[in-house]
Amino acid sequence: MANTLTSSLVLPKLDYCNSLLAALPSKCLSRLQVVLNNAARVVKRCKKRDHQYNVVVHVVHVVVVIVVVVVVVVVVVVVVAVVVVVVVVVVVVVVVIVVEVVIVVVVVVVVLEVLVVVVVVVVERLVVVVIIIVVVVVVVVVVVVVVLVVVVVVIVVEVVIVVVVVVVVIVVVVLVVVVVVG
Image 1: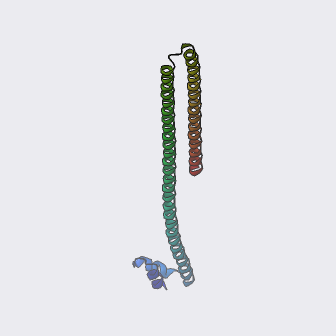
Image 2 (image 1 turned 30 degrees about the vertical axis):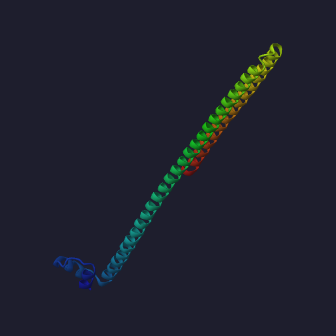
Image 3 (image 1 turned 45 degrees about the vertical axis):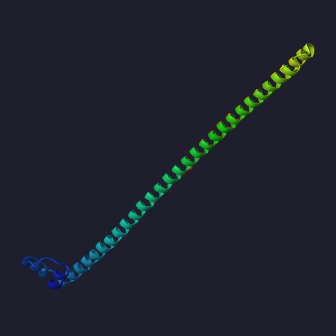
């Protein structure tokens, strides 16, 4: 019995160990064998659980890395989209303002040409010419003032719209970032 126990426990085959084990009653040896077998089973279970824990930790690390990459990609896409929207809005506003300025210049030039033609044609009749010139000048001034007021109002409305759009886009981006990160 003592030799079986020492070989199963992989104890060194020393004389004094054999003599100690041989001195124990067989009942003690069998109980010692059971205790050591149970301890060996516990060690095997612990090793298996440790391996399972390491696998779980590795999977969690991979999932965290994937989530971080996805969040970074989403934030970058949102920021690029916001920049593109702002640039498009600014370009559209600039084009509209340039077109309006060109329209005002053309209207003023046409009105001045008409005024010159009217003055040249009706120079012979002084009284009528003065009345016509006054009326034409008043009409031209009124038309130019109305056109300028309309252009200024349109430009102010466009600037307000751009500011509102930019503020709304920034607020939406901040909310998206807060929701995604939070």
